[in-house]
Image (cartoon, rainbow, N blue to C red; front, side):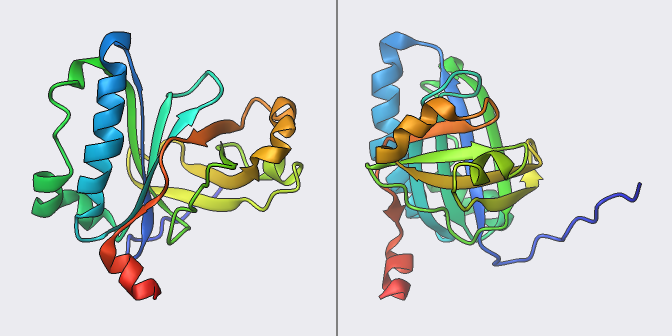
Length: 193
């Protein structure tokens, strides 16, 4: 069997940066979560090369409780000084309670979809079939940097009115509710107008 070819990471090529974790201290979890949503996300979206940021909470067990999806210009954004100053490394106060922490950089989508309060986010690492059976149109993402696990993921949105479908979801589908609206950088918003 031939090994799959890896595409090089193009500079300036938009990608999805995912951060997943759980939190182990119920006594400080609300404070940490408020910090993440109200301070960290706005700090991240102010970093050059970040375009969108949104947080989610898992609705099923078996994977990290929290997920953040960011649309960024590529790996260089995460290794730059501006990211270190504004966005990275300010979890010191809560670091001891953060568990099951994973970071990945995915190619395949230029922008993470905005998931509204009436929608759910579905991710599947085992192929698009489970999402297609729900009559959804999944988008493919391929891990190109950081942990690179899972190697591939398929992403789709589900209207909450169809949430009865959630009971029919196969075990390989990860289900998330949005915790925040999707933040958009001022630079990205200006380009969109």
